[in-house]
Length: 148
Image 1: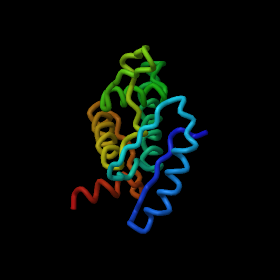
Image 2: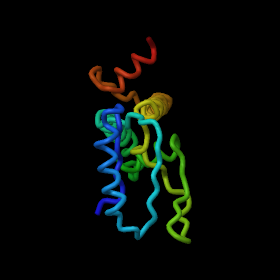
Image 3: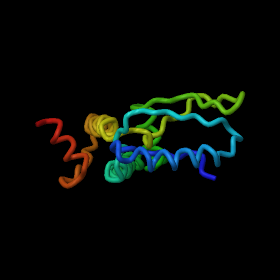
Image 4: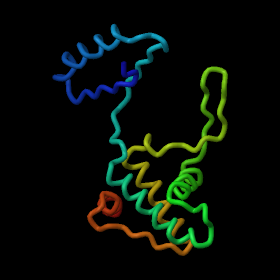
């Protein structure tokens, strides 16, 4: 059973239909772990386009640095950028604490992802790597919206 549903309610018309689903899920919950329900405003998650751009940039950074540092793989460049600009966190599993784990970008909304991508872009530029920004990318569109 899936233990991580998200229900989005867009208007009062959605309440009755969504409430039925929520109640059914509460009744079907397996309770191996307690159930927590959080109500909060919806924020647009980062997009596939933004994520694809990050991966493209990590490949470009890797191509630049791999000649000097053989561990500068695209995956390691992504880890380095996330550690540098998103930071680390401790993960608690029961009584076990795993310290200093690199934060994930998957939890970022569109705006926070633009900020992260800005940081990666400027870091690349400051370190001699001009990262390509496709004119039709969502990142470029969101950057242009910020300027207006």
